[in-house]
Image 1 (cartoon, rainbow, N blue to C red):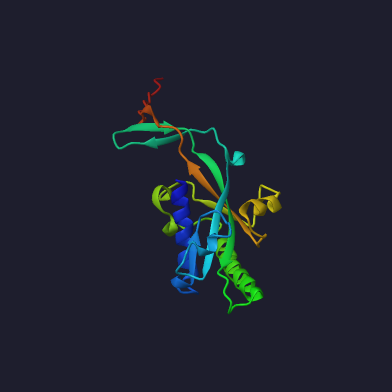
Image 2: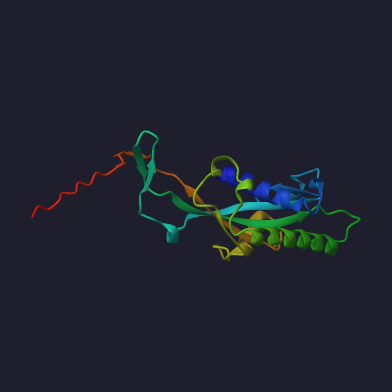
Length: 203
């Protein structure tokens, strides 16, 4: 399911960014954002990196109401509601350095791409169905998103040290997915009709 979410976000960003840039102008990576990520997509000069850094249950959306699903034979299945899980991404942009391009210009290019990514993500508070991939197709409720949410972790200086690079401008982006963790159980036959008898009172 997490892989399907990665593919969904890749499809969303690829289609939207291609309206402004050629598909060969950028690549999308989900690797750890270390100093090697810029060379992970060799065919392009700019890499948009989405690093999944946090996965946790959304306790505010927890529900105890069972869901009943009617079957064609008149019976029904019931199952607990799916667990709502927040998947948080750290988004950075990496431009390959070259001798012909000044350092300041590379950083400007990174900020330009990052600004476009920010606008796209903020445009969709819920991911449209045409971008959904794999097991996320047909899921209810729709995938809710939150862009520019403050990161859960506060020690980002230590994070960048571990990654072996200098701090970069980041976007934090969270998608809430529904995860089915229980198998449905038989709920028996549903009542399909009711019979009401009326008796006339005699004088």
